[in-house]
Length: 153
Image (cartoon, rainbow, N blue to C red; front, side):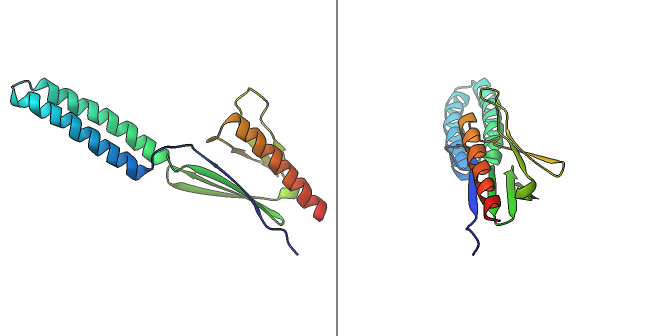
């Protein structure tokens, strides 16, 4: 009987989804351009120019935020396989490793490094989206899970 797969999900802590970001941007534009329109009707057109520049900058920042709000790294350890799936700005990457040959290099405390997995000369870094404490915990749990998998075989 095979053991169930273990899963770790490492994702950003984002308070707004991309759809909510678009709604916030629409509200900001409505408010900013509404105020600019009042000044434009009084002949002060510079406020509209500044509102355009401001909303362009805010729009670019929210677009960047929305593209990366759903970034995630998933690590799945099954019976004889280790799968790393990474979503970054809508691009998907999948990496398969053999857990029996995988070495886990946990990040050293207070060095802000990522978890490194090494197998057959291939290095994969994990934990870009989570805190240092979470990286340390995941590295420890993953090491223990791989050891227990190897003991079963």
